Length: 195
Length: 151
Image (cartoon, rainbow over all chains, first blue to last red):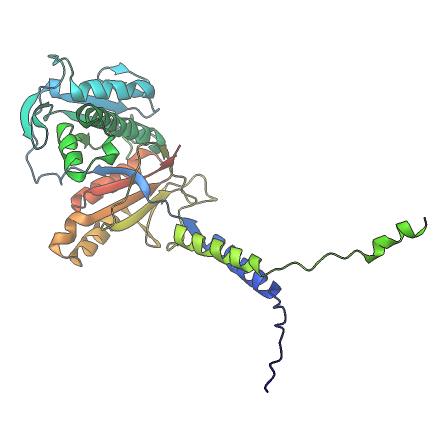
């Protein structure tokens, strides 16, 4: 009769593995960076000369200007950065169909039917050459925020769903109601005209 | 009575099972590898501090991204901001030439996917940024993303 010996497996020393894996971990922390591909998406206007400049009625344009000292001028008055969003929202949506604000156009939008859209409005953002980048991004952020809030409100009203949770078709329909029309013109020469 | 105090010497700490530690570190390591990406370009324009914003969106998956860094080189506070693209310091005209060259290597239906990521330091004056934007416009690369981080 065969007899099996019971063997005991010796304990494995894992301390070396700890050190090596820990070293690898530190190495990766040093050589990599956190994925930071976040940002504000914008589309530039087509090259100069390709299309004839369109004449825009005064009521359809909102001038936003940033001076060299980061002061914000909206229309003709100096405003704080906090007020810009509300101003832009009123301008884009024109809720009371005011004469001063952009004209509305009846448009047929799939899934939503006939909607009044301020399809000709333009928000013109201009800045001086010495405006800081942070101030410019603040303005862009507020304007995109205004569009996002309007879209969010419409999505809530129509389907009682958050805009982000809508299906692609519905998102497209909502964004067609509030098309983003921000014009990024060349900066004006600052005092002294240095380039 | 005396013996009561001498028993202390017999106490030993049991051996720790260290096998769990490398496992945990390995999990951490894989987690980190998925979360981060290796820096491809060596920054030559100093540390680029992205501006802060709230309405951020993620870059599209299919986009063909070119990253342009604009910032002031470290150590030389008085110098003008510079433009960096793929480990090269370029002028505004150089950016336009590069984008045209890159465009020539692509298929026509890929043109609309070309996106430029502008990683600009938050204290940069807008002048140079606008110059770059005009150069991109002339090269007909119109999708841009202003890199920013959450507040």
